[in-house]
Image (cartoon, rainbow, N blue to C red):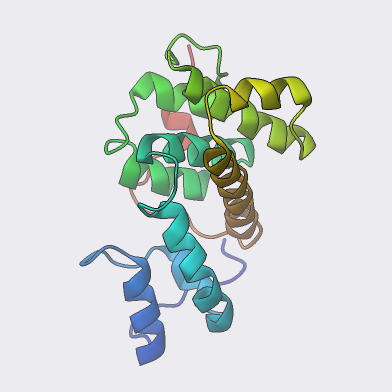
Length: 188
């Protein structure tokens, strides 16, 4: 049960405009954004950063971005945001069912991860989640496959989706209808 109820249409004009700007054309606003809209100054402030994180200026590819987001959300146990990203982006990111299962329940050593960059992304997300830091050995390993702008984007993307996960979980945002659940991608 949601602790902060998502706004429902009809929306005030400023809310409707902000929600429309946050979604692809013709797509109804998701529950998380309608929940955030309860605090319009916050929603307005975070919109620019959210556009950067999901936009073309991010130095990571769409696929790499989604690996980071899905792993972060899975590690934070944020089924809401994980399900939204699987629904909206997994196909566009060319993530296989095995990779979605692995990024949710597995490890970077799973056979579905052939690229060193992708394994490094998962390793870094795990380290940040576990210790809020990256050890020297992992940093050097990641630095061999990621340049400085990519590393900075990776760090901030992981942190951003920690924040999103915290908000979605603590506010108990209702899961999106039809979105996948963690149980839909089980191992073994």
